[in-house]
Length: 375
Ligand code: SF4
Ligand code: SF4
Image 1 (spheres, rainbow, N blue to C red):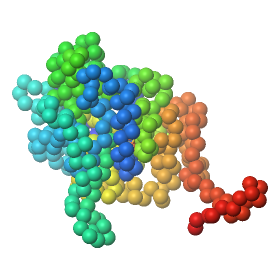
Image 2 (image 1 turned 180 degrees about the vertical axis):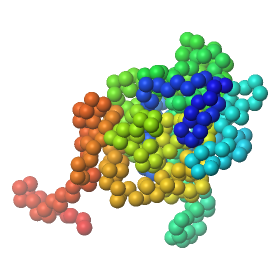
Image 3 (image 1 turned 90 degrees about the vertical axis):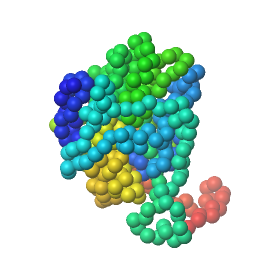
Image 4 (image 1 turned 120 degrees about the horizontal axis):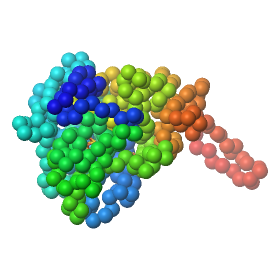
């Protein structure tokens, strides 16, 4: 085992390979407060990449309802249960990661789902955390809540799938950090399925190999966001490149949300993979639940999001989500307008922060009509 630095844990940790960061890292921010669980993302991915034989059960993108939803069944609860003592001292993780608590002879603490675990992709959908009694919604904070968690492969900095593979078939691209399975080398041992704590590698029984989200790399290479991003109805997603904490660029949308405002947080950072999909936590869910999912920064992130209306730069950046299919490398707010540009500085999109309101005349002689304007 090598010693590597995991900034999400605030400390060094053990990993199977030495630290080797890509030239730039593909990353994303998902705003859970805006997801409506329409599953358009799921279908956009399914129809693009996993409509073949042996891929029927594969959901490279899935959306589950928390607290009860999960795909495959209990993927998260099972590992949280196995991983004892997940304590933090401030922003430093004091517990063990899945690499550090690997049993003797194993590279990763993991488990492999049974076929049955993939049978209920919609388990817990729209189930509330508590019974909704009459009038309960009048109290704040209330304990009747649920929210939608959209998930793809995290293209982790320290992928457990890659560490687990005895064939060396999984690799992380140096140019963008996207994690891929070499279909020519894979022999279907499924150690990656066992090792990935997010269960985002799937075995294809027809080909005898493992397959996973490829971050739509043919689109990324052209500066276009992946399918599940550009088709997102709720406009909850923003793809880009995330800098290391010591190389932050304030005009990079992802750096701003993750490193500067710290409003977007990794999913289960305690597993130790430094995942690269970041979530703006749901502001109506209990802080303690959000902390278990997103780490100790959840409470502050919720406060910052609640205050976004008083924070013009943050508010402007939130307007850029879903505004263009291109990857936005830089953003700049001027008054009430935010502009996004590519990495060469060419403007891609310009979005007003406030929608203009037009009141049409009730009597319109030009078009010879009378309108009934509702107040
Ligand atoms: S989320 Fe799982 S499949 Fe994706 S890179 Fe991380 S360990 Fe590998
Ligand atoms: S398309 Fe967007 S809003 Fe709809 S379920 Fe997927 S992430 Fe949520």
